[in-house]
Length: 243
Ligand SMILES: Nc1ncnc2c1ncn2[C@@H]1O[C@H](COP(=O)(O)OP(=O)(O)OP(=O)(O)O)[C@@H](O)[C@H]1O
Ligand SMILES: [Mg+2]
Image 1 (spheres, rainbow, N blue to C red):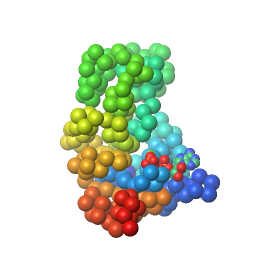
Image 2: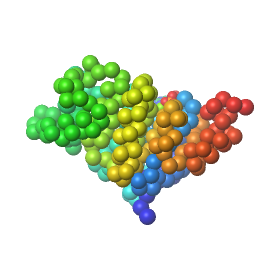
Image 3: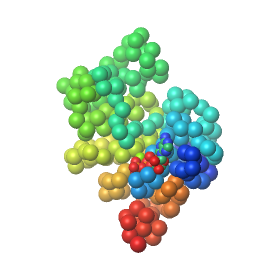
Image 4: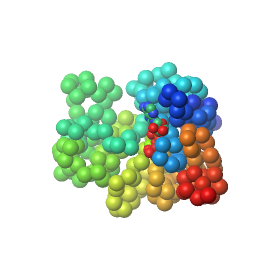
């Protein structure tokens, strides 16, 4: 069985700080894995290394069986992995439609200048994520947080990647918006997408994951079912502040 993702003995040091400490985990194709841990535990740093935005100090990362550690971020996206950002990063002056278009194009800048826009695909993606047709021509800078998160998700989907790394997709959303994004994730799981997701909203995340891992100071604390991980003594002490 080819695994979607294999992280082995990953280490990331920032000077004297070890942000990822000998971390190893796998993700099967079609699986959904929750990554939890307190603020500063190193969750986002793991995402950045998988995407090649940060180079690991040591260790290996395989995507669909292929070592990707030396590839650029664009090459990794082309091989089928994409992420959302904890703080949404839209092109503020572009419209919803144009922001999605950037994700749809392999070489986004050139495509923005020379590419023929696929307006129906943009609209379809925007609609699938809950944008009304009237929202498509709003600029990103006009959007509220809920819509910015939806746009972040739409841009990630637009890359065509089947392994999606979701960093705090529920932060700052209303319960209605959380429900909508959760439904979309369930729908994508049915369609065979693979997820690695980070969220501080544990009740929202629980029904969306098959399994969870908990980290603290970059180190694995527990790996198992969501209930087992949350019930783990060291996780309760670290994450939930229990002693
Ligand atoms: N570029 C960087 N340079 C130096 N230190 C960094 C850098 N990025 C992250 N860190 C540090 O690495 C540690 C892990 O940070 P990271 O953002 O991965 O945590 P996190 O689990 O995503 O936290 P949060 O839940 O607050 O989003 C923190 O101590 C952080 O200050
Ligand atoms: Mg983070």
